[in-house]
Image 1: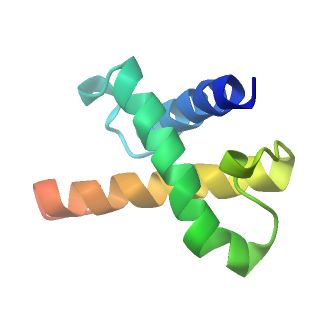
Image 2 (image 1 turned 45 degrees about the vertical axis):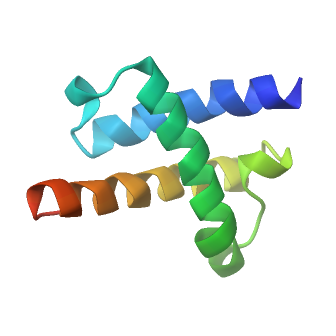
Length: 89
């Protein structure tokens, strides 16, 4: 059940991050899920030690973990945009 929640919440967070980074038209549902889950993994390694909380991949679904996972997804899309376009946006 936790895996299903991680995929569902990761998809929503990936979709929101793609809207913020203006890559929504290029991505489908599958890539939104991948961006959300990989963003949560990035959040677990980089962001949560700085701001506290836990990523959604650990099963925590509070406001701090959702925010950290969202920031991880935005960071992931910024890195991808940097390599694909030469600029963050």
